[in-house]
Amino acid sequence: MGVDQDGAKDLVDAAKEAGIKKFVMLSTLGADNPSVSEEMEDYLKASGLNYTIVRPGSLTNKEGTGKIELKEKMESFGKITSSDVAKTLVGVLEDDVMQNQVFEILARETRIEKAFTY
Image (cartoon, rainbow, N blue to C red):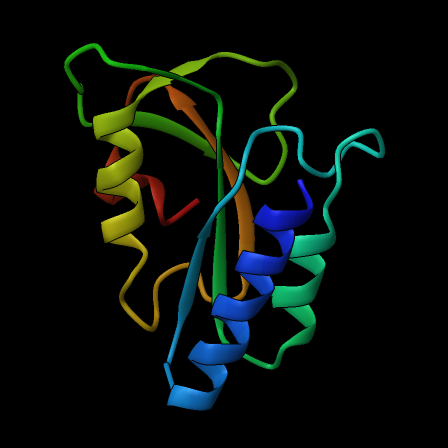
C-alpha cells in the first residue's frame, strides 16, 4: 500500500507543478470506511488542485452498458464494468464537471452523461 500511496502523492505533486487544471483519481467504493486508508484522497483534497474522485464498485470485464448510478455514498456494494468506469472517468475530465467532488458508481439505469447532474 505504501508504494501506491507514495506514487499517487508524487503524481499529485507533479500535476500541481505542471499547472494541471484538474486531477481525476480512481479510488474504490468504500474508501471512506475507517478500515480502508483514505490518505491518498486526503492528500489530493489538500493539494489545492481541482479534483474529482471516482469510487467504483467491483469491476467486471463484461460489455459496458453506458448506464450507472452515481451517489455521494452508496448504501451497498455492487458491480460495474471496467468500460463504464472508463467512460465515467473521461466524462469528468471537463473542468466544470463534478468539480471538487467525490462520488461512488455502480451499474444501474442512468446514462453516464446524465448521471453527472445528480
